[in-house]
Length: 309
Length: 309
Image (cartoon, rainbow over all chains, first blue to last red; front, side, top):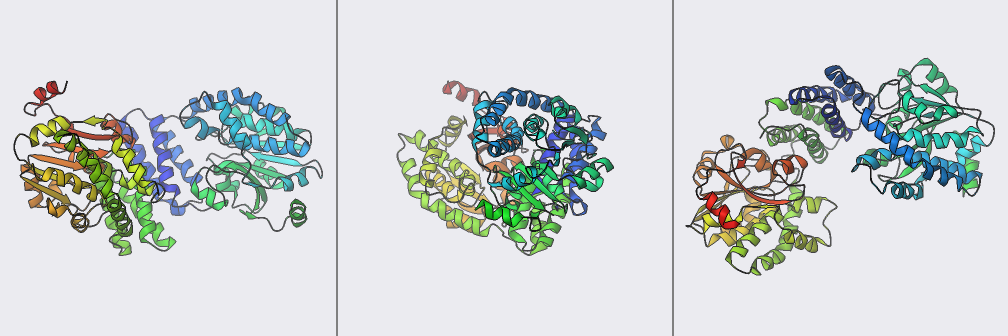
């Protein structure tokens, strides 16, 4: 996905946050922003926004020596997520049938993608539990769940989940637990090293994901996944998996250039992405796309569509 | 006032708005943003944010030939303001006494500074009238009204009002009308030519300001007022006026470097300004400052303060 001009102010805001968190004195913050503006100005030569964000955060780390400015935020998000785990488990346990169980587990993983906005927008709220219950109660604005089920119930599938944020990982573990018994193998891929508040192996393992999945590094060092920049092991798994589930906006922005079919599971957080996905901001989506577009080629897609109506 | 790093993402957002309004095709918008980023990156050599905004909008005009992209928005804001005029007049007429009348007229002019956010935040609302009544009902978070009265009631004063947005001009006319009888002379200074949605002579005159004030151009071509860049006539009036009233954030950002005492009348619209003024976002203030700081030197300031307690 190309760099949208709307992303530029947002990238500058992220750069400012990173400089504030990493650099103590004003002069260094100013020098960081000067370089951040320069990196941003080269947007025409970048493949997508996460690539620019990655370059900026690499520069901030080099200039400050702080390689993980979001460490404390990630820790808090993990704590918050763990505190919500009983609600998440209960929500999935109350499913009416197998299909509803899958649906609910997908919704939990999607709601996990809202954790950052829920938490950053005013600190950990005492009403966080009711907030999450409300999020779980929101229907998907776009939902290719029947298509997903037709694949996973046909035969045990190899599933790759491409992770997004720390904390969200705890929510993803609920999905992985649900898929564990009915799939052949689950891979859970995280960033190679800390970038923004994205999950690394440390948070994935701490979230209990290794009980249900093989936790791997994709090799990505940006807040997204450019497959050609990833490590060979990840590329092989990505190409061969029966199902790829991509979490969050950053992965959508980067993976939607890929030819292979991918299920995107996320909460839309900005107008650019909402427009692309045909929804509005704060909607939940679980959509299947090939090459970033609604799939036409998928075997029995039409049959499934007709079944759904 | 220096350029705050927080202003950089905001400047980029403004640049994007201007490019969207002025340039039809994507390639030109992209080229504009490339140059806007470059201009923004030179922030260390700029005196304040409005100077950067001015440079960006000059570049956009040169690249697109569109010298007044906000023309239609200004026209709508003028219409909106005129539709609210009966409410504004009624509010001032219901004053309990002379002092309350001044207070109310100042509040009208301050509420005019909220017009842009009121209108842009979701289009012209059918509830705009009740919205403005609510704004008028909000007390000033910081109010140097007693000091202001002590000057204007001591002897007929020369007053300079440095204008901000189109539409707000209609609100300012209500203040000018109130001050007309008790002052020696009122000057109402606007931008030399269109910049953002700021008022020019055209909108000031259309708002009826020339009935009460001499409408002049400050010579400024940025969304603020750097006095040393203004025309000689304005500089003379600025230096010699008994009272200067500066409207809006852009003028505060630029005029607060001036030694002379100035009354700032505005609604805070961002955290940077709110912090500087010791308020929170969306607060109304009418504060007197010299060199951007609370005045210590003003004659009888302490006496007035003691009278106020």
